[in-house]
Image (cartoon, rainbow, N blue to C red; front, top):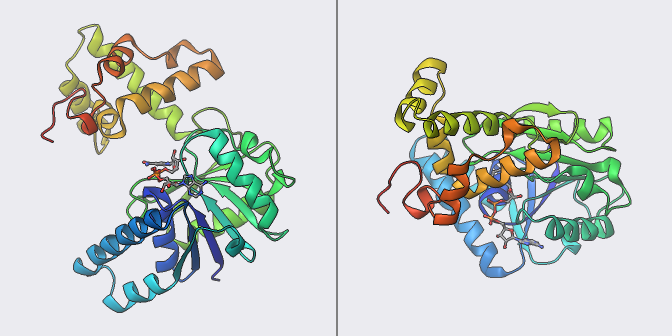
Length: 284
Ligand SMILES: NC(=O)c1ccc[n+]([C@@H]2O[C@H](COP(=O)([O-])OP(=O)(O)OC[C@H]3O[C@@H](n4cnc5c(N)ncnc54)[C@H](O)[C@@H]3O)[C@@H](O)[C@H]2O)c1
């Protein structure tokens, strides 16, 4: 069954979600704050679709049909008949809450309102609406067209029907879901990677092993596609430090306290791939 999907935010994640939805046959309306942001988003979607065509994973006709299913807007009014809205704006609670106030105002009563937040509690986002039971986390991974996982996150008041609708959409775009029953800091995926990253850095800090050897141990010993320190560099040293600190603040569990190296690297501006230097050095 196809639905009318609305996506707020035409960046990396919003664009990716719009793309996979359109390829699966859903009608998509994509909102951003400026036409320039929407144009950039559409261009990124086209580039990605062309890559799938070049690799024979999609026909040129299917790509064209997918493009035609995506309309854009800077207004919320176009969301009035959406069955599901997925918000993928900046990771700031006040920005997300403002979006959800607007969604609560314009969306039909039975619409499902989802957030792609990586870490903000769904309960805190839902609390600004009159319908917290209809709010759910749909945490897709980057790049959305390639990554098979969707972490579904229940807020304190999320209903079973809302969770089921979110699952049905995620599965319709080819994703496999895991359910996070309470929106604890870091959900499941960020908790796991944070614990691994903190321990990996402690092993390097205390001279037990080099960064390269810790990464190699995880790749060859556990079959991880990349080691934890390579993951930190890719995701951003600052992002991982924030994530571990947020989890530590909520749990008071020492195992999540950001190791000194992580804090020093952020202060020094060694943020990973994006700055050319993290645990490893990169050509920029
Ligand atoms: N990048 C990742 O790897 C990743 C992975 C999983 C989840 N997330 C989460 O997804 C969300 C989006 O991340 P992203 O990487 O796509 O960010 P991004 O910066 O690429 O895109 C955000 C977009 O939101 C737009 N925006 C901001 N305020 C808006 C508003 N009020 N209305 C409409 N559009 C608005 C911006 O103009 C921008 O185009 C964040 O919550 C992030 O934590 C990101």
